[in-house]
Amino acid sequence: MIKKISIAVLLLTLTASCVSKKMYTELENKFAELKKENRKLQDESEDCAKDKADLDMAYASLKEELAKTKADRDKFLADYTATDKNLKTLQASYSALEKNSDDALKTNMDKNRELLSQLEAKQRALAAEQAKFDKLKGDLQASSARLAELEGLMAAKEASMKKLKETLSKALNSFEGKGLTVQQKNGKVYVSMENKLLFSSGSWAVGAEGRRAVVEVGKVLGANPDISVLIEGHTDDDAYGGSGPIADNWDLSTKRATAIVSILSENKSINKQNLTAAGRSEYAPLMSNSSAEGKAKNRRIEIILTPKLDEISKMLNEL
Image (cartoon, rainbow, N blue to C red):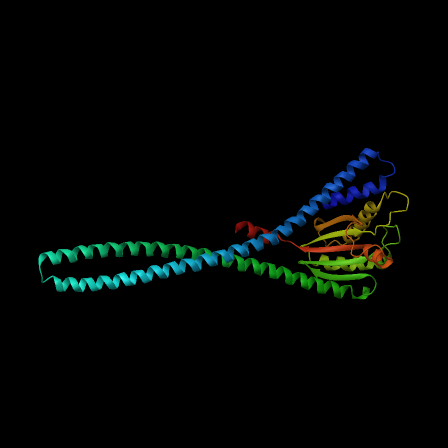
């Protein structure tokens, strides 16, 4: 799908001056739909995190219910013990009174039958509570095991992303202070490159030094084929003043993102299905555009690396 998008955008770039406006508009609409689909996938990843929080709440509730059940069981056990003691006392009394009159014997027998009936009822209630306790204990153990496995998977993903961040930082060390930063947050790794490292003003052609930085990123990605890669183009809020096939900042940011994808695609070790290009225009700034420094920070390419969450999503669905 990503390959088809890349081809479509390239064809649009090459033929924008000669295709009909209707075809151009249809391509733009299709591209917008694909961006929505990308956002939906991001939302689903966030939903996975929310599902884990819900599972934690359910786990705490199950522990509370288990504690209540144990308390109820202990109460029934205490009642059972007291009743059993009374029964033994009455049985001893019955043995003593057996030597007396038949009327006294009959009275004690009636009491014994009543106590035996009460004891049987207590035993049934205790057995029912024990069964409920055993079931809750089994459910809790199963949930605890699944939660521990899920936490282990998430910890492993976090560790792999930390290692990826360290590898990228080492590979891109020579670009430190040139507008390139590597950060890890929200379970993802962000490689941010300011436009001064990549593009001339109003251009989407990547310069020599910027290409070298992108190639270094590509080498790391080629060694990590299970990472999803989103390349976002960002601009400041100055209106595009150039000419040619670029309509506005949306167009410019998209073409810049696609230019980065093209360079990464030259690395045969990278799975092209993991690459996605997106233009954000000026609508996701890092700083205020009221200063030249803020505008420079906002003009950037962000390469967002996300681990595959298929296994975690499957576990959440099974809970």
